[in-house]
Length: 250
Image (cartoon, one colour):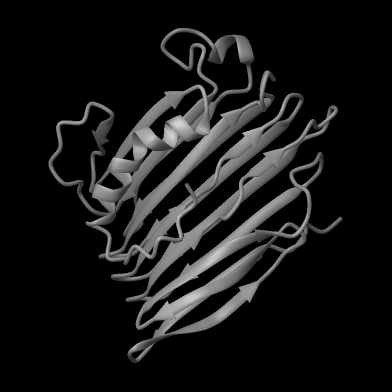
């Protein structure tokens, strides 16, 4: 049985403007052009169906040509539903060309009770490229113990590993231990990749061994988590060559 097709975005620079090479939807999400201005372009992901259900394999493939600045927006969150013994998967592969830049303000990813989901994000940055990524992982809906999730993030800069992370949150008892999530059910992350963070005394920020940094928080709800991370997002946005168009999910 063949895998379902991936949603695909491909953009490249054509003189003083951006050329849209591909905006291809899948059975699960469809990219929609919001605006383009010079070499900056903004694209939204719109859900095509209720996801993620057992057996779903949602894939996103993104190619950003040299010198292009791409903003990705998610107007609404995603829910991984009760898998009833099955498993769902979500994956994204982002390739960013020389001196290109990407910002992705991902909406909350909710892992409902009984869900079993594997998340994987791969980011390949060329020389001079950068990316700013926000993730909000929510374990369970209201008054619900979240299901199983394993979330992996791999980023490289000029083919050199920059960040390799594997968050295994499949066991509720283990993840609720002190020092992991405790009583919190939301894990919020902002990742700056390819450029160094501006100076800060914020205790939630950690510089990577290479150019980049992570800011992370835990909270009882997504709104609180985002409020904690919003100042970091705005400050780090200033070192990524991308305009703020007030289209970020909040």
